[in-house]
Image (cartoon, rainbow, N blue to C red; front, side, top):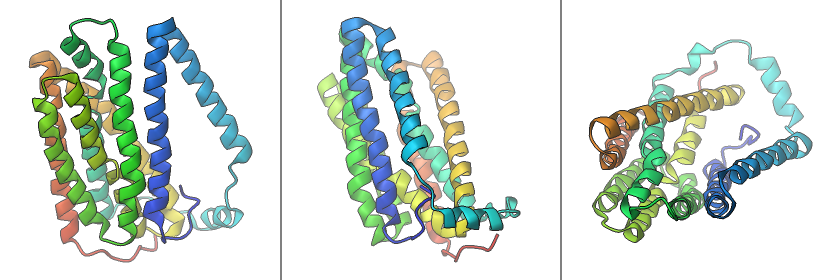
Length: 276
């Protein structure tokens, strides 16, 4: 993503990358669920490893970075690591942190909830795969379509709108009494949230100079990984001390935290990238 040198259509470009990621995530659970039911879980892991190996060779052999951008980064990237942490960038990272927790805190417990609703483990893997696939497809569609708006309107305002819509969409998920409606509303929730990540990342790129965009992507990935690591711990604590269903109530809580941080970010005036 740091190969993009122009801010024009940046949101849409990031949306395309996000869509490809979530399309892969939508196909993976569906195929894995079918294989798990048909031939066992071991084959699913083997197929996943083989797919990652193919991706490695595709990147190694066919992805070429712009030599000009490499030279620029080499000549300009000596100092200024801590200067990148402006109040604007910190707020963006906090938004990403809360969004990632909100979107992933209940994911590990989805198979358990499906099994609990079905009352049997038989067929639960396939059902979970279908629900996850639907949510991933919805996310990919959202990232592809809604991010187009980010090249025309205020990205922060769009993120706030989609976070609010996503938090509201969780309500019917929590009230669903059948797996059919649960899957539909679960996908609707991710349809609202799918464009938030590329939109907020596109906005953050306007806050730093070109020679620091790679650093920002690395920091953003670290923050996202920390959130992904913390989310299951929070979910496990809630599921142990309360109930499995209570974990899903954490989704709107963290989405509201992300929304409140975004509203604070909207009150700040956007400045030109600092020369760090």
